[in-house]
Amino acid sequence: MSGALFSFFGSGAPIAMAAAVVALVASVVFLRTRNFLYDALALAATQAGFVLLAAALAAAVIWTHATARSWWQWDTRLTTALLCGLVYAAYLMLRRAIEEPTERATSAAVVSIFAFLDAPLAAIAIAWWRARRALPPEGAAPPGWSATAGVPAFAMLLAAVAMTVILLRREERRRALDAERRAALTL
Amino acid sequence: MGFLRQVWVVTMKDLRAEIRTKEAINASLAFSIVILLLFSFAFDPTDETMRGLSGGLLWIVFAFAGTLMLNRSFARELPNDCLDALVAAPIPTSALFLGKCLANYVLVLAVELVSLPVFGIFYNVHWARQIPELLLVLMLGSWALTVIGTIFSALTVNIKLREVMLPMLTYPILIPALMSAMQLTTALVGGTPINSDTIDSLKMLVGFDVIFTAVSLVLVETVLVG
Image (cartoon, rainbow over all chains, first blue to last red; front, top):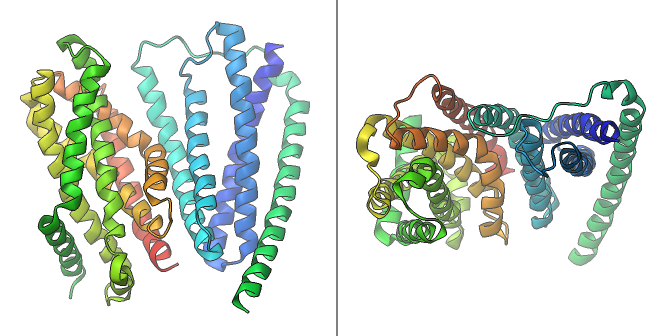
């Protein structure tokens, strides 16, 4: 049971990380080409990664409770994952706050670059901070979890890709609608 | 005009405007003193607890008061379309950004240098045992706060929810720098010199400053011009 829960975090978090890389590359390409397809891709990858990260964090909290009888132990990986979640939540909130499409896309791309650069620094800072505190020891992965984690990890990867494609198409459709609405308003 | 001269002109313009109106610095100072006072109701301000909390407490105050100031940095240019005039001025946007950054830096440092003795008085902390090291940490930490705050102040200047979005964006990104500054300040205020335990935090602060200053200078053109 705890192995299955752990594999949720163990494979969910790396896939979320991969989504962040996709979002970063898409953001940089958008800034260079100004092709809105890449902006939509950055948004879709961030949203998919965010959902996976949230699910992985929830699984990790339950797993910590099951093995250590406490919900949150300031584990280095979990704290870093939570911080990344907060940074990308700010990204998603910023997108909702800006009306004008071009401004929204450029601002979001800039925030995406900052967020990606911040993550490794945060991971290092949190590891150092934790090493100097008298906190309970880090939860160790249950032995042999990776042997059975292949199938769920693959399933999660597929889910992430599917989610990205669906969200990408939704964003594209929404932008097309929005463009028509704007054109109608200027008539 | 050389690059440094352009930066200087923008810095002095901002500082002069602020010193004449005092709209941000007064609010920021009053705010930091109110938070310092509030904290003393949150826990027993005994010497023992203060030794472990001082860094965290101070930097939370600095971060909150700093955001108040940074919110105004670009918002001040909105009336009469001053921001458009600044962007259209024949200087590189990086000079404009650095100038604004320096002006904010001076103001943030001024608020910090006032709240530090106030903190020492309220909580009976002998904070002045290692002044040069503490000043170094203050300067490095405030630069991190100012660079991130100024670039996001430029980014959020046209948003209706500006006041909400700026802290939402800056605090999570600032966490590595704030964390290191808190650890260093706690150690220094407690009388421990910078040793092999805390030198890592100092490196993190320097690294954070260098990385994000460079990235901000590269991206500020995109943020301001689009």
